[in-house]
Figure 1 (tube, one colour):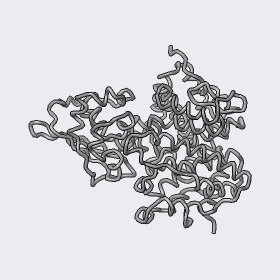
Figure 2 (cartoon, one colour):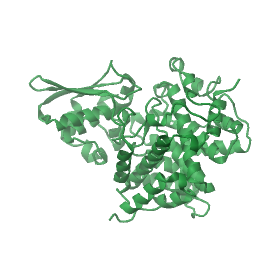
Figure 3 (cartoon, helix red, strand yellow):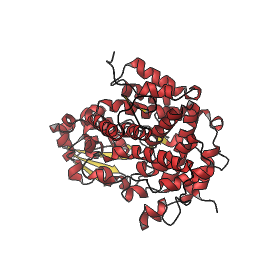
Figure 4 (cartoon, helix red, strand yellow):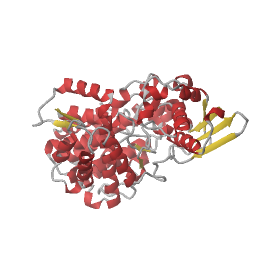
Length: 474
């Protein structure tokens, strides 16, 4: 009987860019642009310099001839290490897109994979775009079939499922046959990983996950190109993804039909998942966005911060271990990464300042006495009316000193397909991010190349624009 790996392989192999609706292609290019903007914005961060130094130590800082470029750095590394670092940079600020039902960041593993492999071969922009679309569509389906079970089991889908999505994308660029693509998924099964343990102490390991997925994908696809045998039942097998990575309770929730829903072995697609990928308006965990927007709305209404007695946050139960627990630690973030995963801080910043921008994630902001005082007043409870994971909604109930209760509910998070950041918004976000460290003209050249990707003769043209150090902003 055909396996899930076979079905995904047939779809990826036979997908034709000309058959992809224009609106899907346009959205895909904007998602690539968003991921690149996130990577460029990370250029001035301490984590970016340290990760870049580590990756250079692994592969050596190579000349551009025969090596691949790093986004925002005038340096070249081996293909695998460049893809790994580019994934880390794109995900490092936690500002990248999320497929809602799959609870996964896909662009930050698939984009670095196809960028690196296409630049290595100097394939066309059309080749890169087709592989990117195929990888996102496959990855979204794999992730949503788990029904949130990977998170519940302590795995980060961005690392785990990202490896499978990126392997299919890499294999598509390398011209693997459908049979080789099926085997490649079995190979990456032995490599995929990503632990949520970083939530305990604000460690940087989450940033590594999409980069590691990209590197694994390149290895797995290359091994398959050389016909190295690998398991066929990568998903439904006795030790396949869903049986190996999920406990008994979460395994029972898996819906395997979602993996192949809407796709055919002829490469056609009746239901596209790319429109269901949400672009982030805030550089924090997506689970906090609705409450952050609720807090900002209350700030703009003229709420007197000094009169607040308590703040009750209602959020989806499944998100509470990530952004609410343990509550004492979430009320006292120790690093920018802690702040990104603190619902009390997202609420405090929104109420106090009416915003939650990159500068609000720095120690001076989350250690401000007024912010600390507000965090102490935040409690978190499960929202019985939540539609998670379809929506990442949230609500605030603010009790004032005189006993009045003021409420604001955001049932559908901003950026969701039902409330999207449209392509014009994505472009605005890109320029805001890209011009943090680079001149507007340089950002415009990158934007033009990405949005004209179908006509790009060779991806090295784009890579050369990306692999540059910042110059004085004018």
